[in-house]
Length: 261
Image 1 (cartoon, rainbow, N blue to C red):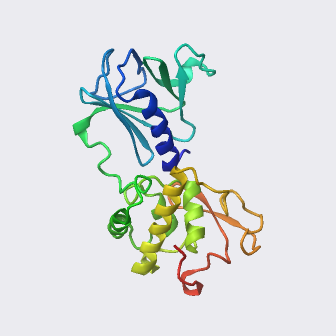
Image 2: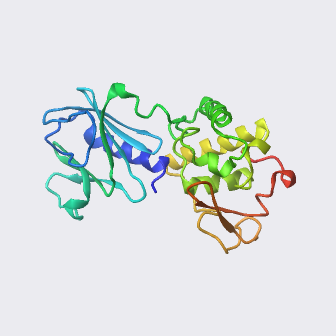
Image 3: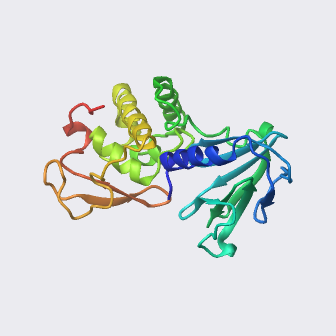
């Protein structure tokens, strides 16, 4: 599933071909909602909000997509073949010189600028290298995590902080030295803040193109790159999403040192 850093990079690419241009054609057969896009509408801006991408138009409509597990946006010069079957296209927008197509997602909504559709999301840690976002995330962690919530589950809760997906979750916890199954209730204030500082740095570096090879994600049964211990995998939470960790570098709370930020 594309994570927040990927969506931010996609938004940056779409901005270069869409912003300020007039819509020549819009194929929105799968879109649902009260918004409307017509020929002649001008694109005001393109932005990422966590894992969501929004295209805002000057007349007040907003096209929102969530790429889910396998969705993607592609940019084509006018007249170029898409290279994929048209039935896989959820959205296609044509502006002078370009066509942008969103493939393989069912989550397409047409809303209004005023509808606050994404207001329930936490701060977008990909959006800016701003420490105040970490403060907001830590405050929302206290609000939304109950006594049984693990830090591994909390990192995927988009109400707490938006943009973290499964790859980044495993890598953030490794960098923070935290066992994924540690209850949030067992973490002191300093450690809670430290893990979201690690998250902010990891995501903003990835947006800038700095994502590195995984330390633990997808590496179950292989040696830890730092200490040589065998990487393990478990499933956490209602969705039973897999999370990878090193038992030596990420020991239980009582046996660990302060996290590195």
